[in-house]
Image (tube, rainbow, N blue to C red; front, side, top):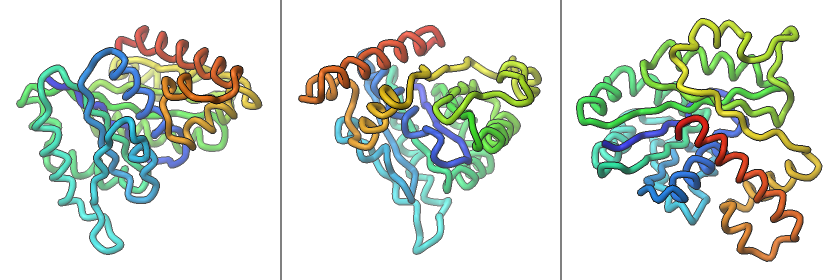
Length: 239
């Protein structure tokens, strides 16, 4: 059985590619065989990681998304070897087309019959994007009957509405049995940790590559601290 990890969220710029890179690095360090796919036709950030050997799907026909080209993705998923992991980074522009394709073609049913496990990872972020990311999460919950991992990204602000935290939100309380885990991305100071992490993502290098580089000592120290905390969180969440 292979495990397929789809990162889905209709709001752009909230950390989907960050989640994809974190999952991939965690699986690789755990000794897993990992297949990576980027379906974002606009900002194929995930495909920029040379270390991951990402397959960038061409899903455009002229200036339009051709949903039929998602057939390529299904072929890749069906060919996965046992005990492997697939990480799929899906862009905001393809959120609705891919979700519709998966539902219309009963792709998840096909994968289940083939013995594959599908997990969906969605990002909820604080700040101005909070309402949009919550709407994206609701859409996923209403569409798919698979384990859903909610990644809480507080880089842009606290995930709070009317004085209530995420676990007090209706979307959580009404669907707590549907959510596999809440994955809390470590919250650090923007001026130091945040800047280092932003530069790491822009450079599209892994945490291990950063440690083996000539980056300043304290930059490497902060990235090491963040990565160790992130790995502990993933293990706690059962990944």
